[in-house]
Length: 136
Image (cartoon, rainbow, N blue to C red; front, side, top):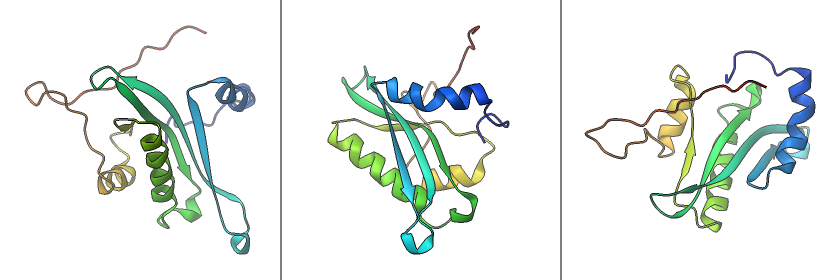
């Protein structure tokens, strides 16, 4: 869903080494049982950050993917539970994520697990996630 296009070969080649070199990154894989083929069926990539408002660590779920044939079978929920357990072990005050506004199935799943809009001050509205692309 993220970029609506496949990753380039250059990005694919740099992805795993780049994540491995990032001291704040961690990834989790979900595997099917041996009886179900034992293949990887889900992945979550996370980054630990810091909340200046709470003076504590936070964990951001940057990517989550579940193979289409395994969706709706609890894989994403299991990955989220594992991330939340790691975040708690690290003393994190929260887990954050971004989701595309049009991704209704993901939004429904995340809301069912207690995630919601980020609001610091109700009078100022929801926080927005902005970006500025930098030249390579």
